[in-house]
Image 1 (cartoon, helix red, strand yellow):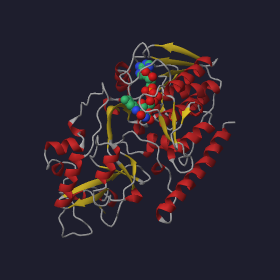
Image 2 (cartoon, rainbow, N blue to C red):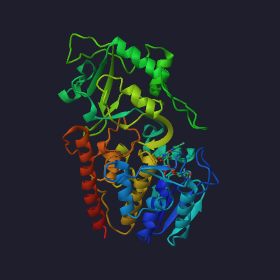
Image 3 (cartoon, rainbow, N blue to C red):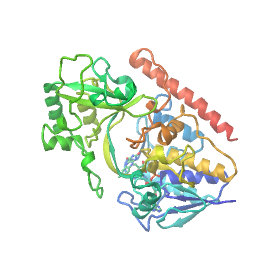
Image 4 (cartoon, rainbow, N blue to C red):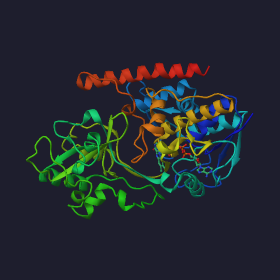
Length: 445
Ligand SMILES: Cc1cc2nc3c(=O)[nH]c(=O)nc-3n(C[C@H](O)[C@H](O)[C@H](O)COP(=O)(O)OP(=O)(O)OC[C@H]3O[C@@H](n4cnc5c(N)ncnc54)[C@H](O)[C@@H]3O)c2cc1C
């Protein structure tokens, strides 16, 4: 039987190796550590947690990442089942003893009769055989160059520059209006592609004060900033001068407030649709290194966003990731070289759990292909399916940035009755997902 090769023994590669081997396919896991290190990893263990020791919320009824835990447990994922055995008290979160956890994953992989190991850096994308590339946000430079030579220079990013993403149903439509600058576009949809939040001079000055005073996160050691001028954090722009943002991402020109046409806004914050479903909007040009608590406070000063809920907050990190919506098919294969699958953070998901989940899918899909079967992804109403659907087509390719799992990625279910209704709706999402995920698993026998 053909062997599956996996590059990278992190969250995604470890899970992919486990899933494929459990399906009966021989695996070689290639890992460069400890011979070649990264600035964030400290050990030679598989599935090392590079920073926090938390897998976030474990609430599988009302939280999207908790639901993803549930699906990974249902699929006998090594990451989740090992995390459960090394759990530490952490309220509703799943936190683990990091060393115990990664040592146990390493021991389980090493004990598996179908998994063997090759230590060392892979410097070129292989041309033959079945491979999964799961080299993560810190993919080594030589391999990144090789990926760029196949995918094109613009298709692999080295930093994320994440603007905050807002749930569409938390934007106050009595304040914002839909209009593209100068009504640009051929169709009405294009002419109304942006939502605009108007600011008076007082709003703007208060916003700049709050921005300058906000707590900012530092870069990790070894993670040099290297900002490109096109993606400066908003607070850095504000530090360059109080008017800089008003001449940059907050410029008011070419826009007329549809609710109060006589009022000329002093500044405007624009929101742009972030997914095909239209459930998520990103704040255009608002990448930031503000700490999360400060971010929500400052962003809710924007008129129209006073009650905003955030599907993800902004950030800038060292992060190697593909423009997956254009490059990968829905079986996670590189369209240009279908013998190569990608998995984990390098596909543009964000976080330990999401990365491991993409490893789980890629491992199962690659094993199915080797065994002569085709495995479609789970439906978009599941947590795993919503993520893979987002990265392989649901997201806007032009502005693609890494994404956490969140209910905004799911096909909507209508809520009634405000906050209470939202809680019921989340339960409806997770009930629907569990049923669908169970059917997907059952179909695999
Ligand atoms: C500094 C930092 C802090 C982070 N903090 C958090 C956090 O607190 N919580 C969270 O959820 N997520 C965090 N993340 C994101 C985190 O990296 C991912 O969530 C997760 O580890 C990604 O899993 P992965 O399997 O895709 O990559 P990784 O877990 O990084 O695994 C990739 C593996 O590939 C190996 N590799 C790379 N290139 C090659 C090569 N050419 N040949 C062979 N092997 C190679 C690496 O050594 C590594 O073991 C952080 C990321 C960084 C960079």
